[in-house]
Length: 129
Image (cartoon, rainbow, N blue to C red):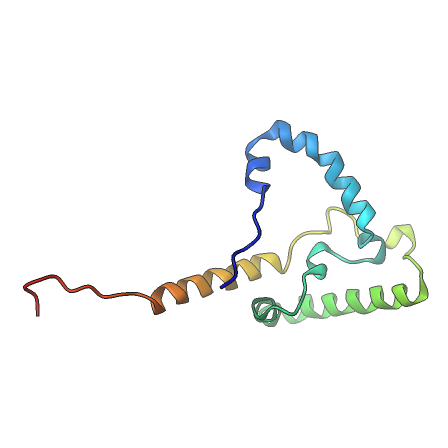
């Protein structure tokens, strides 16, 4: 099982002054990435080549799955046309909430639990049969 990349999110969240300092940089980065101008959400950018992501995608509700496919197809069409959506159709920050990440975390936790149970060793004490 691959080791996840290190994350500084816990350190930033634990220090409000650091969060306030990094907020403008984070907003600039999100705007520079350009995915919201194409109507996408951050979770739409998660690579689908990992088995865990595929499992998480299968667990989405039909509506969430349909909306995701619609956003991806629209963004692909816009990219082919070298266009952006009109500003009133951009994804707003309050709409850009994780919908796949919580499911993905659940899949990873289940994998860890399954691995722990599969590699469980039973140790017998001396004198017991």
